[in-house]
Image 1 (cartoon, rainbow, N blue to C red):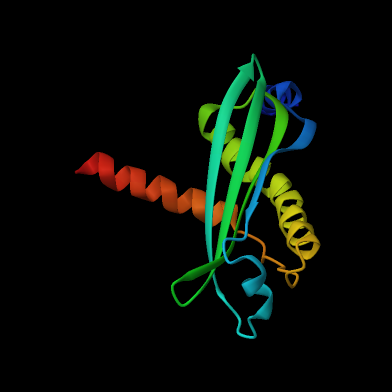
Image 2: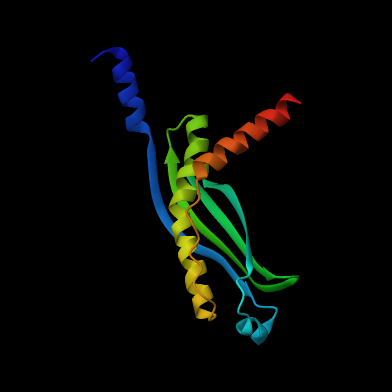
Length: 156
């Protein structure tokens, strides 16, 4: 084995990525129209907002939270607003900064997003709204776009 291969194998052996736990951090559902919302026969417009927050909890332990906010509107009235904060604790160590940023901003949200989708769908069904199956999110593309926007801002 060459020295380069041995060094690469040593680096990979030192990298660690573990899911400590996933959990629902916050859930909110508002139905400002009240029972009038259940009489609507039209499909409301759905607006989705997605945010990610990363917090270092301890050495090699990070909390990643994805916050999904969905607002259903019909004309100028809000039918419902649901906000979910799905979180996870991840053990992450041995990664270079660029790779660490990728793991925390792409891999962790990809793990959490299906949980948030399920919470949104089941909560809306329990509120007697039709199921709302959200499509998957391409966190890789969002990460690349954010990096490009940051590079553009830095160059100006």
